[in-house]
Image (cartoon, rainbow, N blue to C red):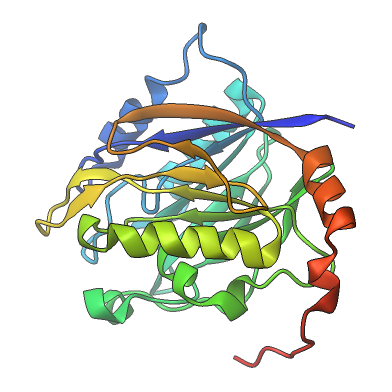
Length: 257
């Protein structure tokens, strides 16, 4: 059993609708001197910024780049890319393994206030994936506001991930909801946001963070650009769940699309 999970979070000011520039931006954090990691987490639409006017088509250059990074670093990589498939556009999360295989999650909750629904189609399938003995539920941004979609039901996941383009004006909601999701689901929560100003003039304050199963803040990137590394303990999580089996008392329910 691998006792710790090493995670690298990338928080950056993304180049607007310029995948190659954003790939180069991320690559600066992976040199011969960089610490080894098991999982790299990138922001929502890391290759373009949160735009309604740009998407990648197959074979998706940013997915190819993620495969190259995963192989070079011998780690998993998660981030979302705006893609067009069969004349429909999706805000698609890619979970890429070191061997080049990948799984995908299409963002379920589209941000109608920001007119995301006018460009993209919603997904309707959750992704549960693994890395060693660890299990993950990777989601995207606005999904954070909908706890039923995030709910930890059997077989339980260990880590809940939200990648985001969450504007600074609503930063307190971001922080509060991430903490709530960690406590109610008895899991680690990873939130990765961007900084800077996008092509629509929206400001982002970052606040990427990691919260544990008790609701304690383990990492807070603030408004700084950079790579932020942290190690998580599978044993601590499962010891806590055995001592306080709150999930076992949860209501049973059935989700309907």
